[in-house]
Length: 500
Image 1 (cartoon, helix red, strand yellow):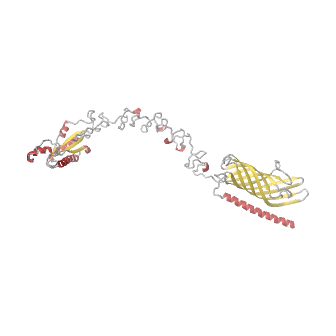
Image 2 (spheres, helix red, strand yellow; image 1 turned 90 degrees about the horizontal axis):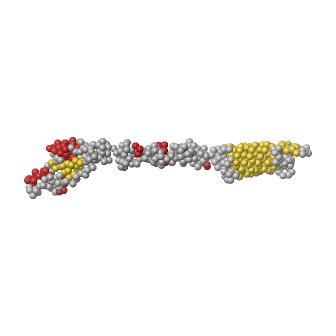
Image 3 (cartoon, helix red, strand yellow; image 1 turned 45 degrees about the horizontal axis):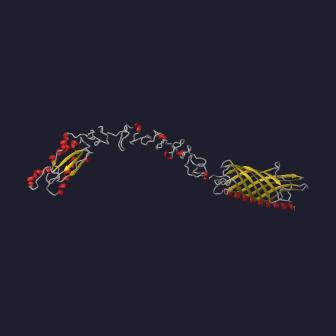
């Protein structure tokens, strides 16, 4: 009765200890899962869950099953691993299994569970690439073990339902096989030593130990950081700012099918190598016009001629240019020849009167008829010291206005004069006012192109009649009246007007 009471107390202590260990393991697992970067066991994804089956081989006082392939006992486990650095992972390892032996009349049957904190030294991430298919590793772990065993000895004594809690350590090596960012498989073997020699019922020698062989699958939790959402984690993404929806290669960069340095999504010719400034299209003749838009892809040309040559630069391709030597800057027609607006055979660039038909001899200007020339030779007279157009001369000016309509490109020089009475400065100003008065009248009458009306005052310097200044004003009045005048000169735009 005393023994049973002691055993019950011991079992309760074991259960209490196991409950504490389980709670600690559960809390650690939650802490790992709740970490800020819930990612798989790499620098991208830092948390990995492994589920596996185990084969146990016992060694103790009853039997040595190590390296005997026909003496395996089965179990399973769960590992929660956390990325620490390219070289190390930390983890929480939970296992459960059974073991038994029967030799020389001694036998036992036991169940055992462990909870350990592990440290893994990885060859992948240092010697090998982190995403290599095969990843070797070494690991050590330590923690606690709980066991329940039934024992029958050769001397006939038995021990039923013996439960205990103890420490446990293990060390081993394994291989990880990476199938994708999310799934991997692994195989590993560990040597495990527990802190008691009671699994087999014989507490007389070295502590019981086991070989534990695990085979299972690993699942990477969470999602790697992928700023541009192209499916390539930032750590491996050489182009982390790829626009949404653009197809990328394994390095996270936009696909460039023709390898011309222009990504397909920006390449107007994605299957032909081209140049960046033409959006990835080829330019065989190097004229800056993409071949697909170039009507002469094998001859350098200009944009104005759709890529065809234009020797004189007039915007008409040589093949269509009837005047291939047109001077620079000359306006041309569809045939590449200079425009002749008035159709007189003199091109506008040589035509002094491009809007009035003329002849080559007159540089494209019409010859002034005799009636007009007679009008132009007339004079407008002025009263003494006055710059007002007298009514008697308005009919003449009206006639000049009408005549000028026939010569819209000609320039009319309006020349003002004065007699000698007064100072030279005064007479100069007076002659200028007289010329301006005539100009204003012509404008009022509606002369075409009023900008072609040019005025100049000559003062008293060009008298029509020579006057004897020693005579009295009365005796020189008639002569002086002839000198108070405005005269005209009609000329073409390209000819130098007589401004003297």
